[in-house]
Amino acid sequence: LLFLCNGKPDLLHAPGRRGKHRRVIRGWRHVFTLLAWGFAHLYTVCQALVPGSFVGAVDPAGDRSWMELLFLSFTTLSGVGLGDILPLKPMARALVMLEQLAGVLFIALVVSRLIGMTFGARRHKEQAHD
Image (cartoon, rainbow, N blue to C red; front, side, top):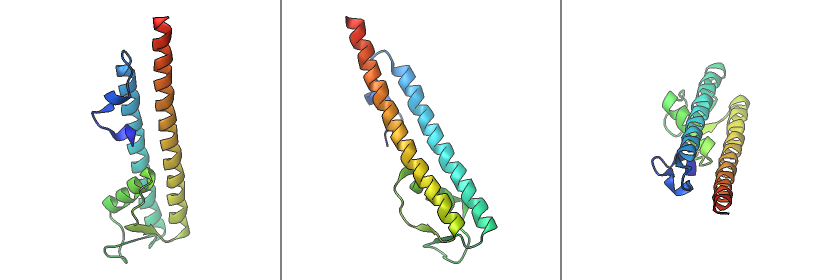
């Protein structure tokens, strides 16, 4: 997850364009975090509307805490999917599937953007030398 390399984005920069790349990477990290928090809020609403939507390894019969749902959101969005907390009801499963899709699309978008920026910087550098 290149967009989470806090403080180490210099490996991805071309000379002279560091500020722009750093801002883009910082922006992607913020978007990722906002997506994870947004889905965690949706999970909280889902749990309130449909009790028993999620089951966890600790106290399976109880409601999941905010931190557990945030953990579920980050692991689902990043593609790790540890399985400590599982969606049981159809509404919860649908939300988790949407977040999985969002996570895959987000990572693909970030990687393609970084590749485009890298090649664009190289092309700009080559044109400057000509």
